[in-house]
Image (cartoon, rainbow over all chains, first blue to last red):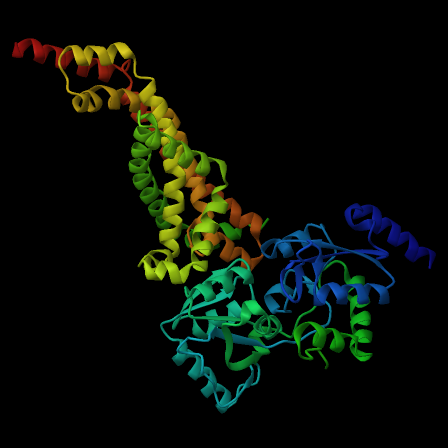
Length: 280
Length: 244
């Protein structure tokens, strides 16, 4: 035990930058604040949303004092690596590409992606025989549905938020058929869908369902099958620096608990309108 | 620092160079024409024209270009039915048009002040000399006022060209994939912002180096003190003597 403590102190001195947070009694969590209902700013300028509530719950379980900081999406991973904060909770899907640079907790939410068009769009009635495709287990019916997506949107402009799994899906499966336009924020993407500059948009159902129920989403309608797994990743988890292994386990345990006692399901229903908790 | 990134992503970033050049070129050309009109309006004795020009310059110089681009692009989307009715939506639908419009209005405002300064710095004696030999007002403008004003304004205008090259990067915020837009796209996929922005920065640096040299050369050629300019003046004088 004394040896361990000595090593911990020595490591602390070596890595002085992260030493202060090693016992994880305080955790700084970054969120984007522009991705309602996951995380957003209220009219009063305060952060709110599913992940803000979930962070509070997880921090109570970890007996840690948490500070939520706001960080633009395109710099959210580099700033984590630079040590500006310790964790990311920003609707970030767990993917292999991101795993190369950061670690993830176990997923807390799995939400499929879906296309959205305006009510008056020629694609407004688009549907396939299957309504849920798991990209890692494609059968013949699924493949037919994917082909139908490509054929339907071929030659049109599809908007997507940059650096998302949804963008990866479009580039991989529709890259040759459609004109992909990438947006810095989902909110700007919505503006252009409304304005008719793009023909369809692809994003998470966790984003679409509440939006379509609100006044801003009245003109929008979801079309085509729900898409999950494979290129869409395992789900949404907490992003953590690779060298902070201990924090991953703390988050894993807290998420496990919150999944088991139904907290995450309740929060998902409250914020997304459907239970998207990531059960095994 | 991942040095292989330079070779790996350099060519992809270079593919944004033509778009950056086109964006800057179009905006500068249109902006210069606009600036000329605004400068002349500003100097006009008509209070209506003069105050309109003053207001235009005031608004566009006093608000951030990022805000202007955002409002022109996303703002116009809010007025789609109206813009469709008057047939302008086909233009505003296009991100490229919105970017060129914003950059043109912005550089138009700045450049008009540069031109105004140039015109006002033309020595009164030279104008008087022009009038004394019987030049008409228009002739006086393009033979005397304009050349001298341009020479005076060139250093400041060179600055404006360089600022425009850098300002064009803001077009990336409205989905245009010029150098910065491509850089952001690559960063989104690789999470290597430092390496990618170093390459992008190097492209802007080289571009502005060429422009700086071009402006220096133009300044040298137009300067009344350069040997070439003196030789040309001497030649003109001799021709005038022979003609007599």
